[in-house]
Image 1 (spheres, rainbow, N blue to C red):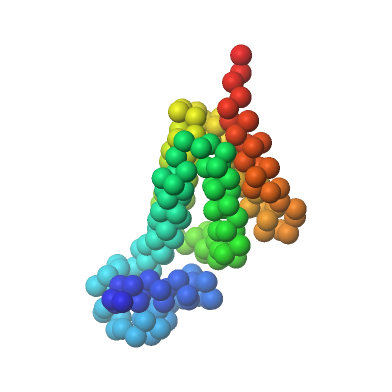
Image 2: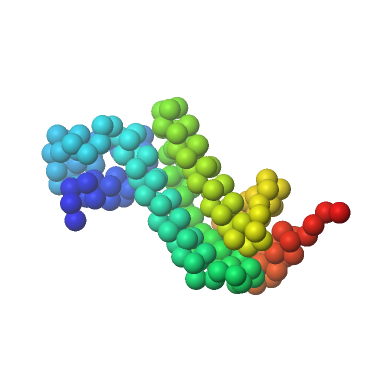
Length: 183
């Protein structure tokens, strides 16, 4: 592993443990075992580092999502179920970390916060549009609203320990809702 990866891993660990605001560049470089000068070779600021940490996480999730689309092409109910299974696995594995990162982003400088929020929102919408278009051949804003609202509710219910519908049941309800045409 290179210095850049050491910095990213150290920053993620410290941001999750101590929070963005309470983590100094010195803390990161000490944990990574590098000099402060080496830090600035790779990142111009702690905010840039936070942006990269969040971007890498989103990229990893995006890759998993793309694999679902590739593996289940042409089978809408299987695609939707795999989509909700991915969300369930992400919620199990990362829910507390995501809350921490969201909290920490809210304390980041306004430009960093706005950039991360914009890129995160754009990525989610882009992936949902790609997913829905794969399912039914087209996508409009109502489709995105339905699926995004369902996913957010799914996550909230899971995180707060409420009963979550099975991914099979949820898939069928979403598919029949998305494929319904207003006359």
